[in-house]
Length: 424
Image (tube, rainbow, N blue to C red; front, side):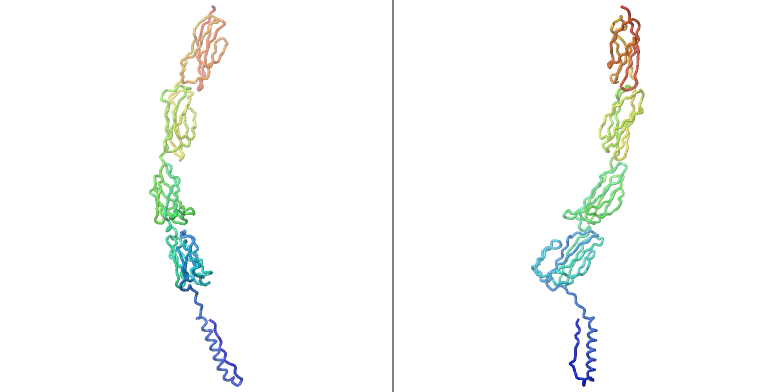
């Protein structure tokens, strides 16, 4: 408010006496003006009648601790507005922006607006909607003068349309284990929602947490420890879904042993078969003769052949460790007997230069033989791969033949017999 000073017309010195009254009046006017100034503050400029407010927001979905810019566009004498929220379109030619400095106020039903009041520039103001950790639908209203406009923003779980749940892995070992439960929250368009609180419940086991907030991928994750089958339910914004966690069966293994007596040095055949539930990571067989054979990781019936070097009853055991660290065993007894043989000559006697046929008999065909060593008793030695040889003598006498059989597995065995050589 401007205070105007009133001056009286100039008078002569002769009227100076009367001038004192005029001066007093002038001082009173100035004093009154000074006292009146505080009561004349400027009234805020608001939108005139006929103004149209359009609210524009970049997204109508907000995390529970997120924020988003809100822009209010004020058009004086505006007539064209279409849509709402992020789809609102204002035709600028329908009017003109309100005066710069027009005050616009904002309110929200959830969260807060910063600043709650702002003044226009080129008909626009921008403020921020800030969520306060609660889920719900925020109704934001902008108003100036008689003009107002509102829009809704879904915060947190309020925007959830679908919840999908997975367990990784979907099974736990027979003795129990821990899996990760992931819940993905999406809006109606299938977009991942950030910052949505998700609640978890389980029918068995223990959850590391009963709630979690979705990340940028829309996934909230917790861990579940269980020793039995469990069903986990995840819920957000009234939507829910579930997943199952299964307990794997205990590992098993079987071994088929020879069903008949085995000769020393003969092949003993075994078949090791893991159970269908859990894959075996490492399997070995202890043959009870000082030797252990590793089969490594097996997933199906696996044949194993072993050769025993000595006779006796052997308690053979197979041990398996599965991929979960569980173990399984199977065993069986195997009887192993020494093999026997005989040796002889045809004929058993003959004249000098007679060709004698020597042979070994009685060895089971299951016993693999490496070689036969023949000492003919006349200083001649011969090795053969077959069980028979021929030999003649140039001098008479009783000849003692020694034959030694060398099996592929086990110790060699020897026997002897005589032939008579006479002079013709």
